[in-house]
Image: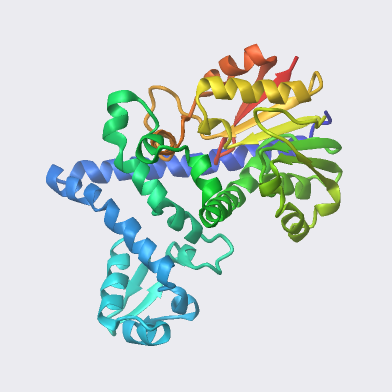
Length: 368
């Protein structure tokens, strides 16, 4: 594997360090601010979380903030455009201002903050799909059953619905498409940091396993024009891959391969990617997935596990909350690099490097 120039490596290391530093400084300032509040005031602030996310849900479900894309407007003007109730529009937009998503001036006009603009469906890094997903009935139902999960350890969503989240999504194509779109949005946010942090080869083949339409794979290929790609997934997700890969300008460099995380696939490559896959499954299922990848991989190939890394005795946002999300929605959990190494060894992988990309942890496993 040819290594990139030292300057490129230094840049890749500095960017994640800067991002992580900002994240930790922000967390420290938040803790300091909380410590200065009376406990009751802090408690009220925490319990207001349902208000912030439901206000955002109302905004994206009705298109409430879309008229603000081009500048400030009064609630009356927005209501007239959208056929909504003017007084309620004012109150909801004022509520969003409390959370720093809108601004309200003394003339009664609302505008979007930089963060609030992420609620726009037209924003290049829109988070509207994430809000729709996080406030969907299937997510809320899983979270509501956490008391039962505390008693028996069973996945909350399974207990609430009598089915797994994957079976539920397969039975509800609209929700499945929304979920997939949200995952693409989040991948595109993290991809530049992931691409910058790892010494990708100039030539060879990268295989994205369970990669959907290829959002992560496409960004790697765009950064390394000499690489080709293999995209492994089931028929449904692969159906939209051609159009998506064409939109990113890499369609001629990717071969799609129908396969299954548990049953197997035929795809020989130099590097394999598993992004946000293993956190959905318990240890036994993860071991099966790792064996499946190893069966396809030649000796010496590298498997890159891209996940938020959770150290057992460290509480940190967002990974520790994502871990509870896995408990509420799936059969999985967030893990540490050492836990991934332990799972991968029986499957035929030796431990490699661990890279903090600033967005995800990158755990390298080498096929032996």
